[in-house]
Amino acid sequence: METRHIAFNDIRTRILGADFYPFRPKAKIGPRLNYAYTFIYIRSGSGFLVIDGKEYRAETRDLFCIEPGTPHAFAADEHDPMVHASVYADLLWDSTPKQKGDKRLNEYRFASYKPQLSADRVRFTDGIVLPAQTSIPAGADWLEPFLAVIRHFDSQEIGSAIRLRSLFESFVTGFARFLAYPFLPSDLRIRKMIDWMKSNLHESFQLADWAGTLQLSQPYLYELFRKETGTSPGQYFMLRKLEQAKTELRETNRSVTLIADKLGFASVHYFSRQFSGHFGESPNQYRKRMRGASELE
Image (cartoon, rainbow, N blue to C red; front, side, top):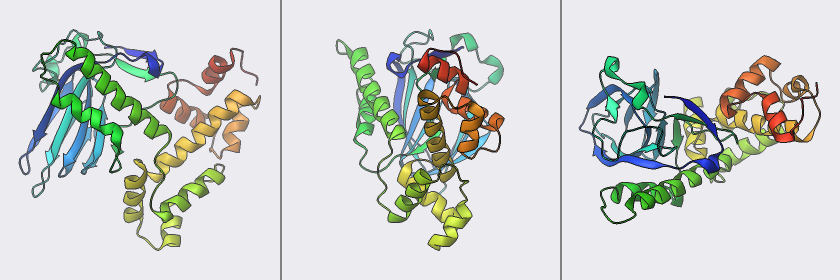
């Protein structure tokens, strides 16, 4: 298994597995390691996912993306167990020898996991990042192709692999657009928060302050924001800061240190870690690639 850096437009997916899986109450699966990208949409119910040691509450309309070779496990709610819609994909077509319908796309015995059989991980050079968890708003029409992949997975018709690829890439393109331009929140309180974020990128965001202003509890406001936008308030604000940083790097000669300070980062090192973690390259590398010139410091 390798990590490949490609443009988002260069993905060429091959679908290896797809199914609907209804959990029984309190059922547990895993931990296990996956051999391909695993996309899981919670069609109904609730439960928990543990991905690479981090626990996530799984609710209806949550979408999870698990990179190849990542330890993960599931636990269903005892009263309203979740139903998964799952798709396993190689984003580079032939980076794994695993074939469509392989029953061993997950390995439960970690010592038996074979990295050479795993699909490669992907880092997109144009800054697109597929989060581990995203809450999908009701009515997202780009999710329908994802569900269609599962419905048509067992088709033996001529060109079925091409059809599955077309459906999946339609979904993942819509997903990427949603991440870049989230739907306008319907809740006026969340709109107010987002408007403040856009106008105050140099400030620090404090959820407690907003909870007090809006007279809501912090946990409730956090979940309300996540349901409306698909991400947490802190993650949303960070991404807005980093998108502005990309603009500064492309269109000005300000130093990386000055940009970090202008956007309210505590240090240039913290800024660089966040930028690299989101976009797969350092601020200097991004500027050099976009402008085709040496960094001006």
